[in-house]
Length: 439
Image 1: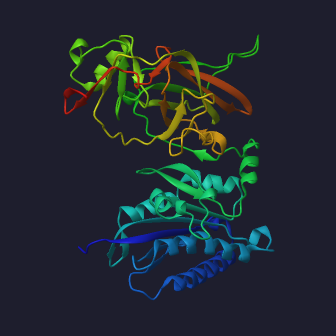
Image 2: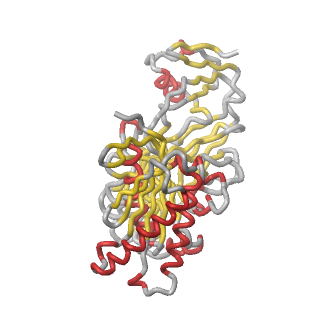
Image 3: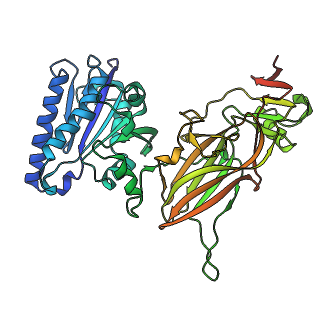
């Protein structure tokens, strides 16, 4: 077996191809493949290692490592979009072409029948992502592109000439065996059109996230308060459930107001159980220990999550006793990372990739759709420097055209409790099952 090579993989597909007549399909294929041959010639089509596999209404293109990934991204996300726009201009709707493009880079094997490997599979899963296709249809876009996280991080976000990261939105991809995040853009669709689509009842999807729900990772149920029905009317039934609690995987920390040692808190040998015991005995989870919030559709109807903020109900001075910290453990489950500043005056949750202060709310340009039987998971990182805070999540959503709100608390309906550790008099850190006091 030959060694795999790092190659750029592109999937191009014609949207709605099968709905056209045979003559129309032949016309579309002639334009598509002649255009692909032209743009590939500009990237060095004659070089060895190129592969252009016809897929009926599209093509799988594999480009060798001798060609810059930047050049490939520019050609397939900018140049191809321009060519398509020129081709469609002044044509009636029935003669226009709409293209979907997926781009990824990874290890690819070559055999006598073509290209193979998990990275080839991934680009196919990206192009076939239902969320991507639905967004393109609802926005009535003639060109849509979805790039992997690798492509976004290596190329798009660096703002190379002609490549604008501002038009991209992050989505979660759940397609067959694939669970990942990707970035989508629809060149030619302005931000105003994106926002207007939210106000149309049948066009309310920007961002659909499907995550695998592992209930054991969500420790305990929550108290959910939803608006009641008008007096005399039937009781309103919330079409989804909400579960939230501190994520005791990852890097949990807790702080107690007293000066203690680990031996003063009997319980399990597991560090994460000790953290929970600290809180149950009057302590707080420490700043930076995330809260996992999972919303699960009940199979009745789709709702749109419009905003999320935190309400601090209790505020006290930070604990001055003992901080306990577990060693780091990576939780690989798909979730949306968010951050909230419990000290600040603006309690909206923000994208964890941005600065907690000054960055816009995560929901400023993102709406999450929760479909029946699907779920979405958020990991909210509460940051506190000046307080020991009791707080809850306030969720705003749209159900059948009506705006509604929900209050979400922690286990047994208790407030979530987070404290700064900056005032703690001592700290113990667990490494390899052994507690050590930090100097």
